[in-house]
Amino acid sequence: MSRSLRVLWDDKLSSYDFGPTHPLNPVRVELTMALAREFGVLTHPNVEVEAFDSADDDLLRLVHGDDYLSAVKKAGATGTADPAFGLGTPDNPVFPGMHEASALVAGATVAAAAAVWSGQAEHAANVAGGLHHAMSRSASGFCVYNDPAVAIAWLLAEGVRRVAYVDVDVHHGDGVQAAFYQDPRVLTISLHESPRTLFPGTGFPHETGAEGTSVNVALPAGTGDAGWLRAFHAVVPQLLRAFEPEILVTQQGCDCHLLDPLAHLALTVDGQRAAYQALHRLAHEITGGRWVLTGGGGYELVQVVPRAWTHLLAEAAGHPIDPLTLTPGPWREFVRVRTGVTAPQRMTDRSAGDGDGTAMEVQTWENGYDPANAVDRAVLATRRAVFPEHGLDPLTET
Image (cartoon, rainbow, N blue to C red; front, top):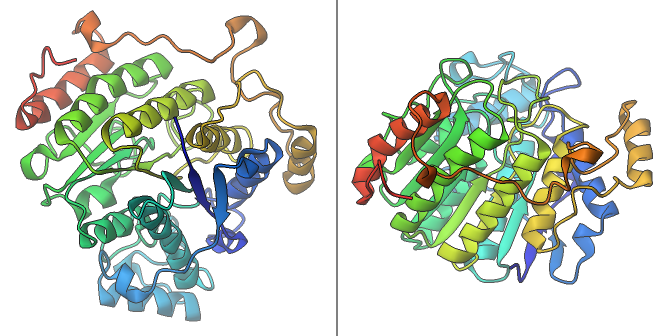
């Protein structure tokens, strides 16, 4: 499907670093890029790895207030906490160069959006991005500047009429939702663990925004591949087709994996790979291939994040990796030296007798609603909340 992929990368993106004991360790992105290189994902003729400019204050002001920008700059320069702006908390400790590192992440995502919107690339990715919790005047949930929101605001300023944002992180995409809650030009869809059991405590189906353009699928703890994919296919394609966006922006947090230490969903790398395939198909069907990809959460730094996001980049490049493929020996050795951890052996979570992992059967909504199933109840709550706003029947639309 893909014609071209631009990957925005600079080793300085690893400077977004809250410290060695913080869950959001930049080694996860370093290992991802190393694995993608070993597989040759970044050297295909239709893939280019490009540098980019840091986001300047004018770009950041599209989402963030001047007082907040000043507070971030001061905190990073002096080491002084400012709890009024969410800076210096356990989630968001102050670190040297905080503004510069955060602006670099935002600049990469805006550059990805610019490459796609200008037609320089069909797809573009910033795996260091996806900092979706940051609010206009506050850091939150490991996020200082909200790079997806800044990129979407830039697209709107460039004249894009409708943007769709799909967030598959285990945590609700609250910052992006808040930025566009009253803007019917932006459809935000977040699939996440129920706010009753997980930070940030928002993302209920009744949070519907302007004309039903804020969509929240709040899934019960323990949801695995089959339930998650059923929910995705019962909500996302229908709304994207009805909304008819000109460009698709996605946040690809992989912390919904069963090994993630901060959450309680139970997806595998194979289920996540199926989600990437689905989003890729939808981008080609609905937005003419215009797809901006960002990273996001993911706190199993070795076993999950590098494999998940390498699959993501390979899918976006149009050169998917067979899940049964062994991880390259040089990469496994690099992981051992860099982290002291034994790397995974294969690009799948399936064992040898479980099939090849290349296809995953999903019971779609047309198979019928099961009121005894907690996932189905969550899906129906979302469909009832927003489908009528888009001219869709919440009970029958498949």
